[in-house]
Amino acid sequence: MQSESYNILEIKDRKIWDNFTASRQNHTFLHSWAWGEFNEVMGDKIWRLALYNGATVKAVVLIIKVHARRGDFLFIPHGPIGDREAFPAIARKAKELANQAGANFIRISPLVKDSGANRKIFQALGFRPAPIHMHAETTWTLDLTPTEDELLIAMRKTTRNLIRRAQREGVEIKTGTSDKDVEIFYDLYKETVKKHNFTPFSLTYIKNQVKIFSQNNSVRVFTARHNGQPLASSIIMFYGDSAFYHHGASIQSKIPAAYLLQWEAIREAKRRGHKFYNFWGIIKEDVSLSHPWQGITLFKKGFGGFQSDYLHAQDMPLSWRYWINWAIETIRKKVRHL
Image (cartoon, rainbow, N blue to C red):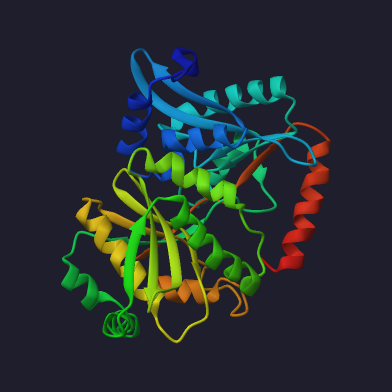
């Protein structure tokens, strides 16, 4: 198929957008209409583009203009999504928008398998590996089609026992989407930031995510309490055929509240009819035992599931200023041992 037969238009209809993205085999909440709304609320310019062949949508892409101290860039989260033959036309359109917007580079975090063939596709389009990742590139996913009993049996024995122990010790799991629910999450989140020394999202950022996604019943804040005290909290997104463990936080405790919280989130995903529970990012097995994600990786894998490896984030440099950004991000990655 020749790219000349394509027509690229901006989509204004939420139903057309979500019906297409949620129907694709690989999709996440980052493809949703709501994710674009969230970025607009945060002050970013976005474009929702569809590539048509006649009256048929062949691919879509969400493009976000990111304002950064070292210069603006365009970011495509988990995109494009759709037929691969449409990617060259989308790349050309993104480059056109970037030049109009004065962006220094285009960054894509593609949701495609990490393979030599896919690396060559992006290289041919003018992309190169980014110095950092933007979203999880190695993920852990649980198939929800078995029964609850079958899921429990398939778990690591320690995980199953800790779920039951939390139940015996009276841990309670509540869900909601109110500002109060988010504030409780954020109090625990600040403790998690101190423990693991990472750059946090702001309270406004988290509140806006929950507010936007709750309008379509696509998010719940799960909170685990013991004797009334919050011990763990997670923000779970629901989109298409999957639920996503998007944000998590907890405090140090002998009570295994986080295990029961995840189990209740898994059960909620099953009740909603989702096929998969995506635990989001983990580290690969060949990574150092001192890696800061080692503990959370062990925690997630204990529930059972399978690993997916996606292509590393890709950059298309458009200005000499890109290389200043590249150097700074490369140094920071080495300093943080990520």
